[in-house]
Structure formats: C-alpha cells, structure tokens
Image (tube, rainbow, N blue to C red; front, side):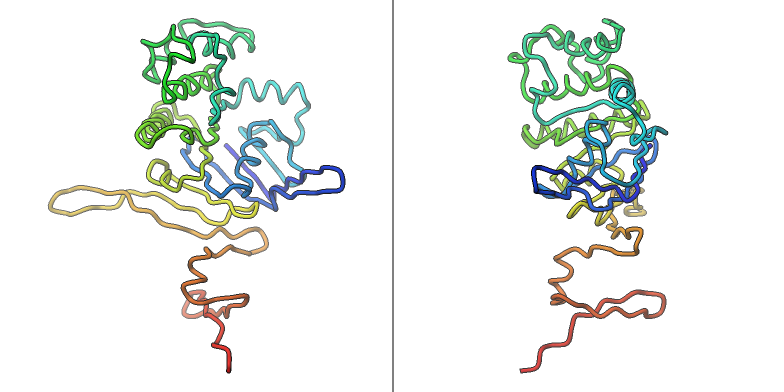
Amino acid sequence: MIVCENLVKIYKAADLEVVALQGLDLIVEDGELMGIIGNSGSGKSTLLNMLGGLDRPSAGKLFVAGKNLFQLNQAELIQYRLRTVGFVWQNNARNLIPYLSAQQNVELPMLIAGQRKRDRARELLEIVGLGHRKRNKLSELSGGEQQRVAIAIALANEPKLLLADEPTGSVDSKTAAMILDLFKELNRTMGLTVVIVTHDPEIAKKVDRVVAIRDGKTSSEILRREASGAQDEGESENTHEEWAVLDQAGRLQIPQEYLQAIGAEGKIKIELEEGRIVLYPPPPKRT
C-alpha cells in the first residue's frame, strides 16, 4: 500500500532551512493496521501529510496504492485525496462543520465527489455506533462521539487508506481505547489499511506493528504477535518484539536507554561474535 524510499522533506523560509525528514524508509502492506510514534518534531506528522497528498516530498520515492505521488499534478492530487485516502485529525474543527448534523457532515465529502448517498451516510454512522445521533450537531456530541463521526466522514468515499493524526489526543483514556478498538474493527471487517500517528506508546497494544520515527528517520519497529499461553488453559497472549531499522546505508539508531545502560558515550566497540553483532562500551578513562 505504501512505499517510501529515502524520503526527504526540507522546509524553506527566507534563509532558513528545516529538514523534517532525512532519508526515511517505510513499507506498509495492504490491509495492515499500524502505528507511527515519535516525539514532537520527529517528522511523523510531516510524513502523514505527504502520504495524504497534502504536502510534497523534496526528494526520494513515495508510492501509495500504486500511485507515484511525485508525478501527480494538482488536479490528480485532489482526486487522490477524494478517492484514495481518508483523514481523521486530532482537532475536530478540521473534521466537522459545527452547524451541520452528524449525517450532513458524513454526506458532505460524497457531495464534493459528485455523489450523495444518504443511505450510505446512515450506514456509516451505524458502523461507528452513532446511528441514533445522526441529527445531532457538533455542540450536542461528546469529544469521543465527534471523533467517531470524523471516522465515518473519513470512510464516506470508500478510501483504500485511512490516516489518523493523534486521533485520541483530546479524549480520556477510556474513550481513546474505544476509538482504537474501532480502528481495529474497521481494519478487520473492511480490510482497510490504517496508519495512526501518535506520541502514545500504548498504541502497540492495539495494532499489528509500530514504527518509531526519530530525527526524521525510522529508528525501530515493534511487532505484535500471538504467543502461546499456559498449555493447561489453552490461552494465548500478546507479546511484543522490538527491532531496530537499518537504513539503505546500513545505519541504525540504537535506543538511548540502551546506550546509557552500558555507559556508551560518543563511541562504542563493535565485534562480530558467533553470528552476532556485539556492542561494547568504551574502556574506562585512565586517571
């Protein structure tokens, strides 16, 4: 569904240049449910904007659903945003028009695309659990309900890819879990590819894979898999494996807490031992 190779984004203002992405590599499979995490300024929202066709990369390769986003003209980008991707934003002001009802909000993207299907709008509100709130306006809905309407809006034109930017950032933990469960259900029942950008590491419990971005590059992945539980009970539990990501030059970013644990500062010793790459801290300084 998504292929990013050596993706670079540079913002220019007067004589100032800010490098938001520095050669990012990422592959997302069709039908995958994944999260992208990173601190503020790491480049995760920049990546999401480029995946959604809202911003253009400066260099590299970017393909989404078989489309080369570097080669799309402005008219083609508009069609791409209407037909291929759906957006869910943290700020509900970007999702909803306050003087319209929930159903009218869901109908709006269909109108823009040249079609209006009231039955489809009602169906989508039922899917997100808000069929009974279809006539309510923004001020009459809770934060969690507003975000579920936003998800219905994002699904209105049957996109191949759903992009969510901090979708749980403005709701409490219970509502956040409900929203993430809804993304999981949509992924399972519709086969929808879902990419969720967040700073919340708890997302690893809800998705199949988490990619961490640091300094404009993918630095690690966390994979969730089913592991066998107690044999006498026949249960299974979710476990997580964290993998460092090698870029095309063979470089990797080691988590800071790992380096601190071995007292590594500046330089480390690398050796190949019995099929393993082993990192050693520098020898203690002589006094």
